[in-house]
Length: 104
Image 1 (cartoon, helix red, strand yellow):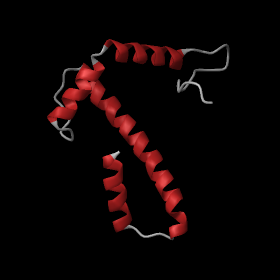
Image 2 (spheres, one colour):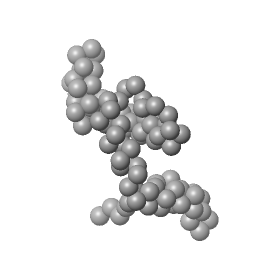
Image 3 (tube, one colour):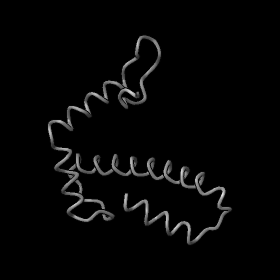
Image 4 (spheres, rainbow, N blue to C red):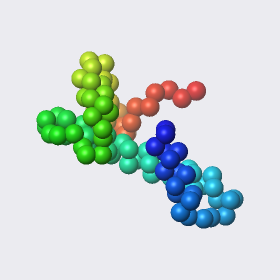
């Protein structure tokens, strides 16, 4: 979350827009930041699987934390479940894109 706050503050310092658009800008920024973060974590995990060096953008403590998380049995179980869900045909409805849980 801290990364988003810092970047959002710098974004507002570099660019100006009508205050009426602030919520739309924030929403668009958060959506793009989430996509990029997910993509980054996916690439970092691929590096870890291939026993490559840590990405230069991460400090060692963060890299060690990711590696410890990826080695947990619970994490492997969640990844296997989600992978299976993405590949399932769901009774002819096509492949599932995500498994976000029930929404109430």
